[in-house]
Amino acid sequence: GTLGELSPKPHPWLYAETCRVGLGIDFADRNSVIGIEDSGAGVCSIRLAGFPTIGFAGGNIIESGTRELCCHYCQTFADVLKIIK
Image (cartoon, one colour):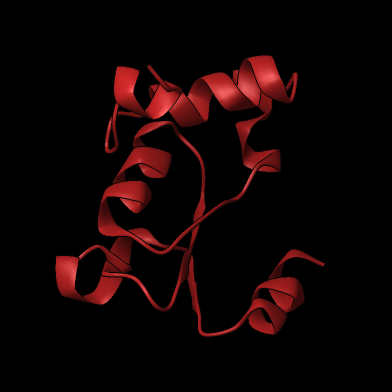
């Protein structure tokens, strides 16, 4: 199966392992990573993995009640770029 099938959102494993193994970033440096998601389950997953989260419009973040878990909420990719620069 895929990684998402092994531990589906909102389980934090996928994001934590991608950071550690895929990107080579130690958990102690987790604040150098920002997760971007458009789904409530994704926001929960990123936050449970210990990373700050940017919510992105178009998904179900508002409807799922997870907007308050996001450090920012953006309507466009241009808005995201302003934050991460």
